[in-house]
Image (cartoon, rainbow, N blue to C red; front, side, top):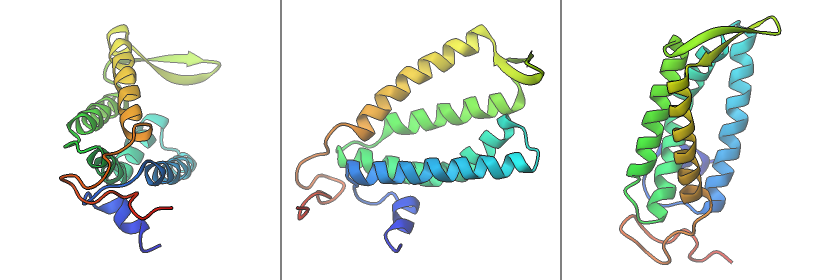
Length: 154
């Protein structure tokens, strides 16, 4: 448990792909639970997403930065992705660029065509970020952000 707190609260050092995926699974489960709790209180899905994004920002930021540092990067690409995701989440919560549509009796927000194209572009960029964080090996040996997290691992 002692190693979980710094994993989700600091940006110092590097983490391996395995540690990053472990952190991602924890954050996905926590996000699901958080959205269910917010739903019980009658908070709309768009606002629940915004609240969850805000609460999960620091843990996401921490593991993403450390993972990019493992690849000897300043994480600019990841920071841009989080910023754009945050802006789009705020726009969705405020209903900017969306219209309300009735789908089987359930009011649903649908993005306009221009906003849909932005979501598509951000989705493609998200795939790039996912590959960088979750699939590509980190720098072998020490780099400018610290020692190799795999040194000493069997």
